[in-house]
Amino acid sequence: MTSSCTSSGSSWYVDPATTGSGNGSSWTNAWTTLDAINWRGVRPGDTIYLSGGSTSQAYPAPTMTIGASDTSGAPITIEPGVDAGHNGTVTFDYSSCGSTCGTQAFKLNGYNYIAFEGLHRWELNSLRN
Image (cartoon, rainbow, N blue to C red; front, side):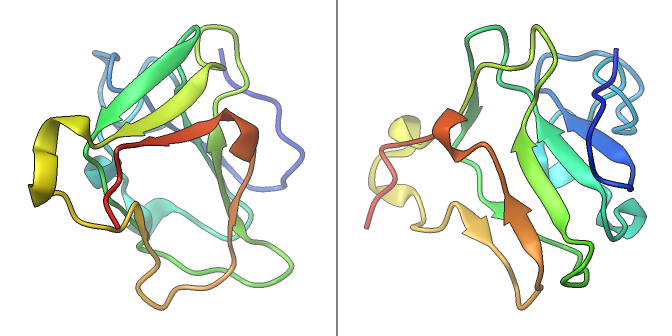
């Protein structure tokens, strides 16, 4: 099942629990890590959904490195999933790496027009200053 989103672009999916082809095209074939996102295929107006599982989904010690830019009229949107089974809280969990964790959850690398939506369903656990 895929989401019906209001953007005019494509929908992409990240789910660490999936076992499909890993091309990001659906929840079944989602990318399994944030590093696996194929930024060359992400276009203006696209949405990347991160699975929040049924209630929550942990992404251990990630840094999401943005690899594409868009325009003010068509940003890339990154948000927790909206479909049943994926609409829980997205947790970036840094508790397992102690003092070795970096201090960046997101690296924009100079890219612009990235929209983070659904922030009430994001959690950063043990991110160090």
